[in-house]
Length: 250
Image (tube, rainbow, N blue to C red; front, side, top):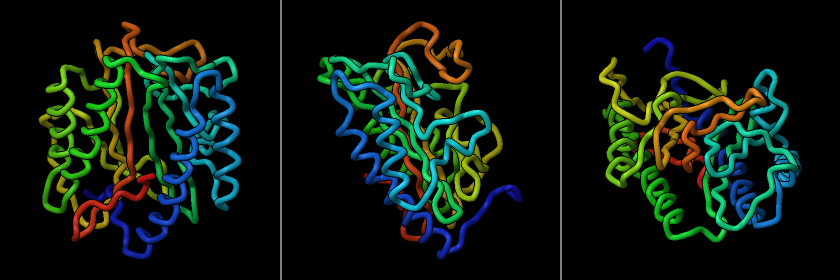
């Protein structure tokens, strides 16, 4: 427990300010994702919008990563480099992960969407959208991190899909990645109590097929080994005595 960072009300207030800004940016990026657009255009827009906030892109603070966004299409899960060669087309799933470093604190958020999606893709994404809110509702004082994990696993698997097991959500604040780890499945490991002042990046990562992953040749993009579609939803959440407070809702 000594590694967990508990924020005071003033720190959470600053994180809420930054979270609102990146939530608004998330909404603008979503509108820009259309057939014929490419990932570099979304990246360029993200950099421009972040610049207007007075903050900095969180992901550019990760050693070796030089972009404000991670953008993944279809079987891509996370850490996709936003290049102009990634051109969106009708029927694609597009995931965007973005973070903002604002007044000394990070916020981290992701969304997935379909471009004129098929009924199958729409149903798949609907499960993830519902699951992230189920997971957030479990982030209450007195609960355990495993309650968040259970909400994710139960909802994803009841929809007929598989949770990703090699990657997890995390705490977030002065560092982009802080304790605790937040798996999308119940591990049976050490129970960590959810306490007031925790700020959590809750992530729902799941796939239509096997959860086995592969690293692409660019050294960053992580995709599904079986090439099935995967998706990602993430919000930064503060634990308060009044319940979970979503800082990055857009």
